[in-house]
Amino acid sequence: MRVLCAFPEAMPSSNSRPPACLAPVALFLALLLHLSLSSQAGDRRPLPVDRAPGLKEKTLILLDVSTKNPVRTVNENFLSLQLDPSIIHDGWLDFLSSKRLVTLARGLSPAFLRFGGKRTDFLQFQNLRNPAKSRGGPGPDYYLKNYEDAFFLFVDIVRSDVALDKQKGCKIAQHPDVMLELQREKAAQMHLVLLKEQFSNTYSNLILTARSLDKLYNFADCSGLHLIFALNALRRNPNNSWNSSSALSLLKYSASKKYNISWELGNEPNNYRTMHGRAVNGSQLGKDYIQLKSLLQPIRIYSRASLYGPNIGRPRKNVIALLDGFMKVAGSTVDAVTWQHCYIDGRVVKVMDFLKTRLLDTLSDQIRKIQKVVNTYTPGKKIWLEGVVTTSAGGTNNLSDSYAAGFLWLNTLGMLANQGIDVVIRHSFFDHGYNHLVDQNFNPLPDYWLSLLYKRLIGPKVLAVHVAGLQRKPRPGRVIRDKLRIYAHCTNHHNHNYVRGSITLFIINLHRSRKKIKLAGTLRDKLVHQYLLQPYGQEGLKSKSVQLNGQPLTMVDDGTLPDLKPRPLRAGRTLVIPPVTMGFYVVKNVNALACRYR
Image (tube, rainbow, N blue to C red; front, side, top):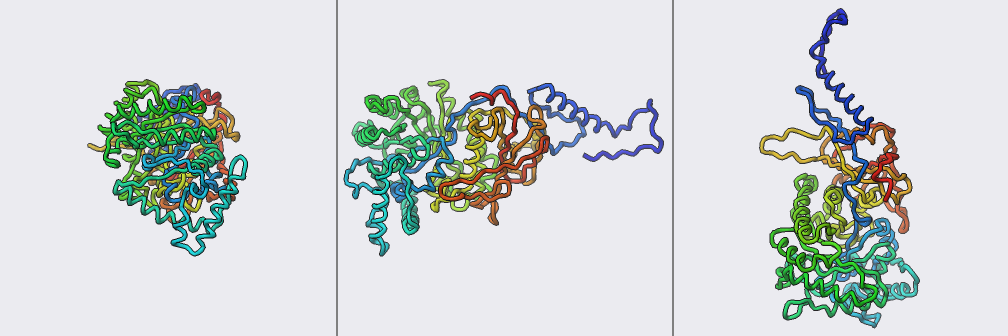
């Protein structure tokens, strides 16, 4: 702020009044003194934002956090993962034993692993005993038709299966490069087939064999993930009740192997009419869940297994009606109510769509609609958001898998935790279009690194944030939406680099200019560790590589993730957030009461 003032040549006497132009300066100094005294006194009220007339708005943003009590506490597995059943169709299920994939998944544990998606309701279990018939994945016929060395490839896959069977504990495989190259070509062709099915709403059946289930569970168990299996709900009897014969066979086999699994029934039942020509209303779906519960109870290992549902889609009027009918019948049967969300139509997405604040805020209203129905029948029931994707139709190459998509993903995590959603399940960890965290070369994408930082630094306790300096006067007829998003949690107590009582901020800056944030109150003059995540390379926001504090992030080897090294900032230093970036900031040794205990 510049103040122009002309002083007389002679200094004024002690009785003379100061020049009128010093009034704004006096007001500004008084405001700073008030903030300083409030922070020293431990005042936890929101910071004042009123300004004196004629005083220009400061670019400095003052930030404080309420440290006495958390506003929410979410699940320890808040950020969780999903695998789509299409990995059976395109053959990637055979490669889940890859050491590199298991290492990447372990980095995001503890978490749930939901096995479900659009093809859930076309999945049939067959307990075949012949290993040659029960391999799952791309059969030898495909390779025989397309490659001269098909026989040797098939032998390699069978040998890999045999070697896995001989291993005790976690079964980890090293796949030859030729196998991976042929599989990628196979998957690329199958991806076109799957997209055609999705756009035409005509889906072919998938066979899940016992060996395929073994491979799926091995991956989850070795990675420290708890498997949630979504059963086929579209198998119907003539009276439209659920046909549970295939599900019962799967339950019995899983119990014989002592697999620790939670269960779900169906995927987006509100779409059954368009997908299958047969609708299932909420009341009938509730009866189906009660039937599934009755199947689980006599099986000793699953008598107390968790059950989740109904996995509805976006809460439009018909979907809310379905949820209402379900909650009346089976609201007390499920351990958490689940639903799905997609932000953008993947066929028309542009890079700037990921920066629209209006899009970031669409989720908030949907959460309130779901909570209203759930709390009507079962107040306090946990709510999960499953199958989260930034773009529909499998995503868009060079956009859904780029740095730009991270703004939606990180804001989703912050917003959902603040509004009391217990678990968020990301679709998909691997494979399935371009919304995944890991690509088909087994390389982590920007959203993976974002998720890894979140897991390492963010704990389940959510804290209230107070800021001054963000408010602006809206233009007539225009709503001002925040382009600077700030969230605060207790630092993850499993991170031994930080003592309990530390706080982690994560900040999204969608402005085209940098923003300066001054920590106040209990955060004032504390040491801060910065984890600034930016795109790496010439592609900018479309980059599939990221850098942490200026250093590119890559795996050390197939079994080792890189150290996530912070940049220490001196105590009292202003945080400078570069334009269009995301970052995490650990405020050390705050000794926050809300964060000292679990």
